[in-house]
Amino acid sequence: MTTEDGTATDDAIHYFVDESGDGVLFDGKGRVLYEAGNTPRHFILGMVQIKRPEQVAESLETLRGRLLCDPYFKDVPSFRPAARKTAIQFHAKDDLPEVRREVFRLLMTLDFKFFAVVKSMKNVLDYVRSRNAMDSSYRYRPNELYDLTVRMLFKHRLHKNRVYRVIFARRGQRDRTAALKEQLLLSRDRFLEQIGRKAADTTLDVYPAFPEHSTGLQVTDYCLWALQRLFERGEDRYLDMLREKISLIHDVDDKCQKGYGCYYSRSKPLTLSHIKNRQV
Image 1 (cartoon, rainbow, N blue to C red):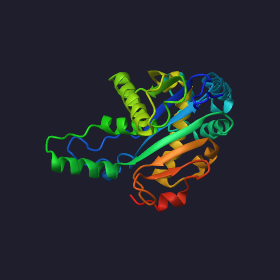
Image 2 (tube, helix red, strand yellow; image 1 turned 180 degrees about the horizontal axis):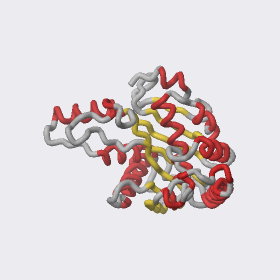
Image 3 (cartoon, helix red, strand yellow; image 1 turned 180 degrees about the vertical axis):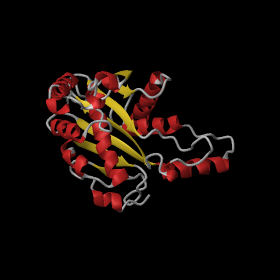
Image 4 (cartoon, rainbow, N blue to C red; image 1 turned 90 degrees about the vertical axis):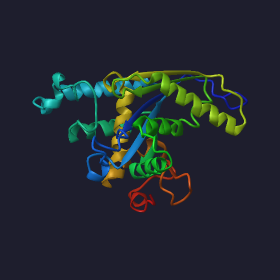
């Protein structure tokens, strides 16, 4: 339901945000990590929008309970609570292939939307070197990349509803909740200025959380893992399972179509051929 000016009036919008890759470029000796094959070649910030998080949580917890009771998994280390893996949360990298298959099968039936921004670490490196050439005092920090992709991811997504709740996966020891909220507000206000709208009358709540305490973040993790497998390994079968859930993927550094990158959606799906023909 919306008002006459297009503003939605329904319940709060819930976003769950996580990343694939950490944005770190160099090791302690100044060597480029991704060139040595030690880190992913892409940084991906993704989120899922879930209208009824409690329903999604109930479905995933029911699945976890069923798997924990399955004798097939009784001696699997990741099913022991002390391991802090599948027994307490779904995490695509740590879960067994049999578990991943069950999770993906369930995700296909749940109500959520997936959004992502993809940055090439090669382009990030080129930017850093260019900045250093102009300003020798400049020092790259991974938070720069994270904040940039936050602004890109949320550019059009914080101005229609009355209440937004954004849950970020915790990163490291430092609490960046205030800094991330600042980036969200900056992204929203820039967009409103761009379209000639006054400041939005919205409530924006931002929370950090560990995935084990947030089922929504576990959904985001699985979506990110599927997208990463396509970009890093050319493996598309996992993302294919989530086609109906993909609202928008922005491949920022692929200039094959426009200077601002390429956009993919459910109606214009990202495929393996796009990855093979990227111009980055």
